[in-house]
Length: 93
View 1 (spheres, rainbow, N blue to C red):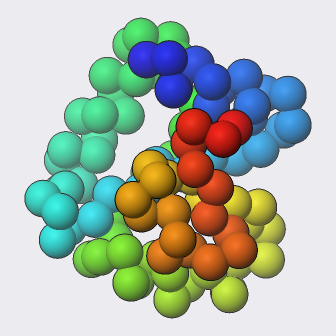
View 2: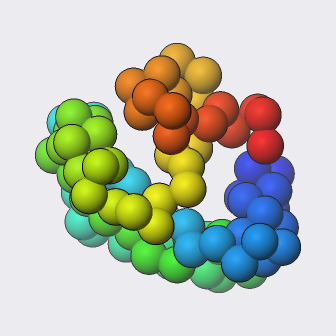
View 3: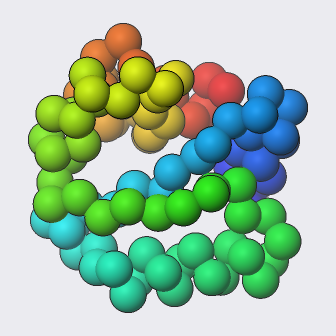
């Protein structure tokens, strides 16, 4: 929950809209994302405005150039390089 609190503070301070992304090839489904979103809502620390299910990370990466309002993609250290200059490690926020 510490990460969720940190993201909420960040989004609140800078007026950012955060998307919770899930990847079907990693086992995420719309139902699981909805359940995760609802669980965060009940704990009053949901920093995300909405969620989106992608087939895989490549689908998200392919869409990055077409999202001019995107400021960053926050992920764990082992994944962040895939997003190029948009990638930000969760621990570096």
